[in-house]
Amino acid sequence: MATRAEAYVDTSALIAFADAADTHHELFTRLFANPPSLVTSTLVVSEGHGWFLRRYGRPLATRFLDMLEGMARRFSEQELTLADAVGLHLMGVQGVRTCWSTDFHLGLTGVPLAVNSG
Image 1 (cartoon, one colour):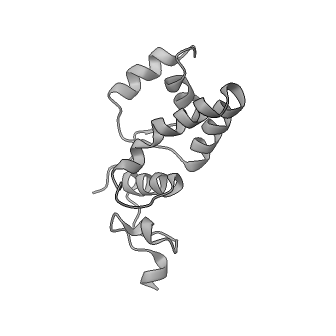
Image 2 (spheres, one colour):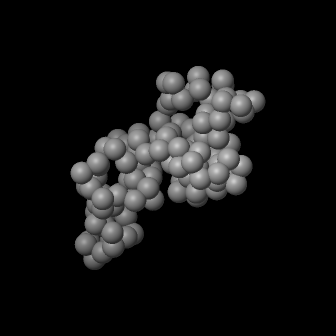
Image 3 (tube, rainbow, N blue to C red):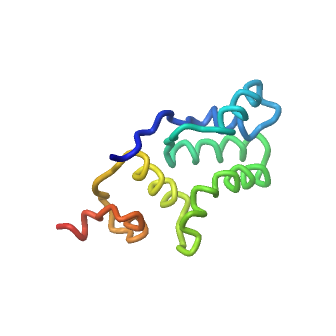
């Protein structure tokens, strides 16, 4: 049986974790130190990147993305976009049985692509 996500990670949690000046930084540092099964979305990643870009500029926005890059390291031999890496993560934690995509990268975990299964 696939693992169900215990917590959805929203942009505010990622920002608080990444920004030591944030009021909730200590809380999210503790929570991310030993996290349960988590799920987020590419929209959250995009929103977080935009927040850091507007507030602190490109260098810290890039560091935010670097922080999230760990999701892609599992398939480091593949040329994955961040969107693909997050999609693979979501499919894994949600126990997805098929993927509606033509992108072969999204079949790396064994989830059949709709384009291949007719």
